[in-house]
Image 1 (cartoon, rainbow, N blue to C red):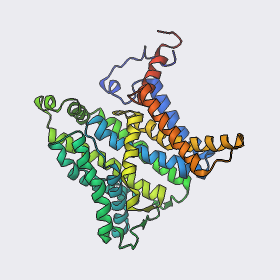
Image 2 (cartoon, rainbow, N blue to C red):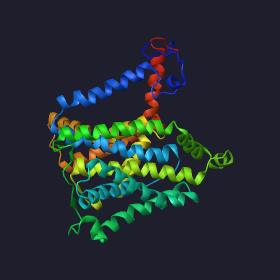
Image 3 (cartoon, rainbow, N blue to C red):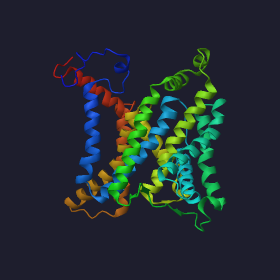
Image 4 (cartoon, rainbow, N blue to C red):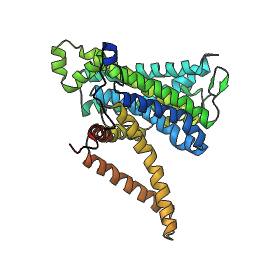
Length: 358
């Protein structure tokens, strides 16, 4: 049995409550982090870092933020891209207006600014929920880009509204190459993911899940509904704000209000639906699916057409890619409605009994 739990006894409360109580999980996480931090930089090209790995990590962080709000607290939101925009623009302005401020502090303050905006747009959740709340958060998606365009101070009075992110320098080290930017994003995402894993297991995380399952019953047992929902909006928006800052500083290198549009919010929502709602792992699996699959399909369809001697126009190739991509999404949701994270759990359950069939 590869995934054997028997014999792993706990003798203290601390050992029983640790993040990864099974030895195999701890080894797997350490190996994964070692491969991501050491192995990948040795073999990956600049294209992989710039076009695949960095956006995968950034979108994983944004999906993690939305999953905290939607998956754990049960509050549907369509304003994820707007909160990312707030984090990116706030980090830019902190770097611009405060001389000598460390870039990491700007990222944190950008997340705090996004959290404040998230709490503001989360106030309707105290009276409405479900699709009505989604429409209320949709207002942020239209209001934030409009405000950035209309108020020139946010973009430093740029004529086009597009601003260029400042260089990322930490302790005198310039993160100006794709591999350095990747390592920076990897460290930040890993730290915040571990913090989220701890948070959802804490008292406030259990309060979120109680409100998600039945808010009336949660109120009866003493959970303060208003405080719990607003904390969920604040934490979720903080994660999205930091993701937006990384999106601007480590991936795009610039901030454009129209780049944080409704399409981006839907993409992040699809990530948690496909990956698994209410799962930390599901955020990463969904981001990998949405980010990596189009690139894989583009390579397969293009090489396949060349191998068959077909001279397909570029528009037909992109259309076929969208059709196959949509069909795969429907297929995965039919096979496992709970997302890829559920398939991962089923695989671990099978490994607990392997090689025995039952």
